[in-house]
Amino acid sequence: MMINFKQTVTFRNLIRIFLALIIVYVLLLIPSPSPRVQQVRETSMTKPFIWNQDQRWDLLEKNFIRARRSECDSLNLVINNGLASMEKLLATIDASSLQPAAREFFAIEEQFFSLAPLMGACPERISDYTGIASGMRDAVKRQSIRWNMNDRSARETLYRLLYGERSALEEVILQLPRKKQPSSLLKGPDEPSVTPSAFLLNVPVHSGDILVSRGGAPTSALIARGNDFPGNFSHVALVYVDSLTGKISVIESHIERGVAIATAEDYLRDKKLRVMVLRLRHDLPALKRDPWLPEKAASQMLERALSAHIPYDFSMDYTDPSGLFCSEVASSAYRNLGVNLWMGMSHISSPGLRSWLAAFGVTHFETQEPSDLEYDPQLSVVAEWRDAETLRKDHMDNAVTDAMLERAEQGEPLRYDWYMLPVARILKAYCAVINLLGFEGPIPEGMSAVSSLKHEYYAAKHKKMTGMILKDAEKFRRDRGYEPPYWELLRMARKAY
Image (cartoon, rainbow, N blue to C red; front, side, top):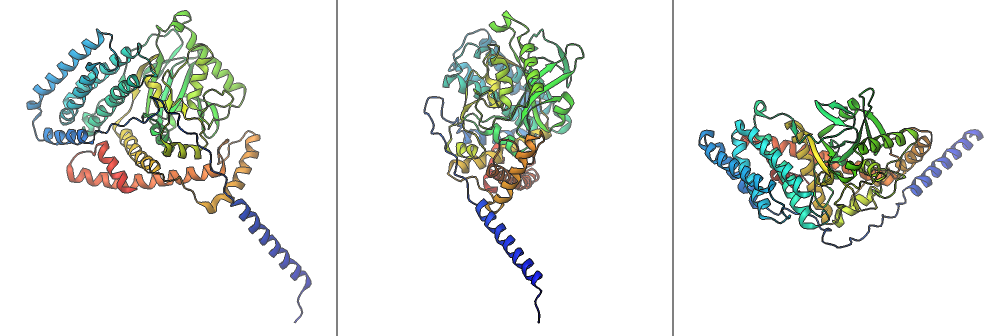
């Protein structure tokens, strides 16, 4: 039988192409060197805060179960006495100049937590609880003006009271029947401002205001919790209000496309589990000299964002203005005018967490985390929005993230599908080309192929665990008749891992 010569050549060429592809694939499989993680520079500030009060949380849950068996009429006397005691304490705090370790702060924390089980069992009293929560937050913020925010005692007191107040209030809200739940808006003091304003969700916001929010993605939870003081916020944006049109522009930096400008509608359309409005205090020396300073900060950042592309800063180096992560949009705008935000720097001290964040490109672990901006005494909390449905999502995401970070602390690495590395590297090369042409690619500018795969692994793991505890939480509600509190969700997440 005769063999066609052309067919033989074609077959040999196919073999050569196939072998060449295999060689390229194998070469692209060669792993990148692991990022070098800086050692922790040990100071009084570089250690993670740990509540370490599991017995206290379990006691609160038992008290809630007991309170649910009682009539609210029989609990009202205890509630009234507790509220009166707290109001008296708040008056004492307001009339004093207290140091962070003052006994009044520990007393008010204890009383606020102790009231939570009773409030969860008596929905009609929720407005009293939200009112005392708001007063507590304002009083503590006013006291912190005189504190050194790089002092460990000051930072822990602020965190315990502000984060603790929010956590206790939200646990109560989640236990209430839908018709009894309070408004999603929690207002703070109306801090005066002379800059142009417009309404955002029925709240006036001014040029220079800062929006701190929480996204719905798994990495949003990691940003919020990945801190020595785990928080609830993952994103920062700066508000500009046009004085002629009243149009709101929101300046923010996204992992996918760097610094961008959104309308108020687009900003709110992007999934958010909570939003908080922060405003510089009008009595700051810099604002006394120039009340229009916030307007100037916002307009200068707007002009910069319009004039050139500003890439996302994966390294989280707040001192380098060439690229900006979300917090830097606000901090660099104000720093240029002499106001240094984040008076208490954020620290990421956990070796396991540092290793995971390094895998995503982070190189600076003393930085500016979104959650920590709330504790800056230069800022007033003007308003915060959250509702029960988004709180459930927020709490579940937090519990899964905390469980995953516990495993990171035990030395578990952040993995990825190694066989996909050649594909990711080719895709990254394609993204680099279209980025130069001004387009976005599936792998963000500044993120490596390996980082993108580890991000996919992390997100998939988080999603799978969340699905598991959703089922466990539903079973908990059926069996016990109430919403699982956060510490129960955390136990479910540890089991799901």
